[in-house]
Image (cartoon, rainbow, N blue to C red):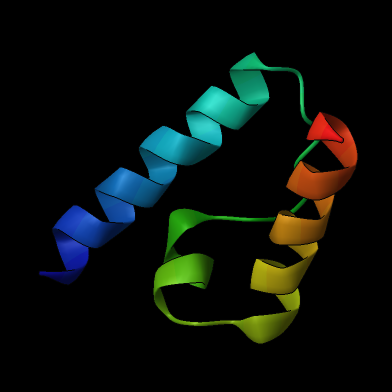
Amino acid sequence: NAVHAIQNVETALRFLRYKEIKLVNIRGEDIVDGNPKLTLGLIWTIILHFQ
């Protein structure tokens, strides 16, 4: 179900914000819809933060 998937992604994004990872212009819908630019940007941001 897309609604549950979006809620799950939003929960993950809230966690990342709590960890003070700067997320710009990204929403759960973007990830669930498969936006490659935003998805790869998010992954790269996570990699850089936790390396």
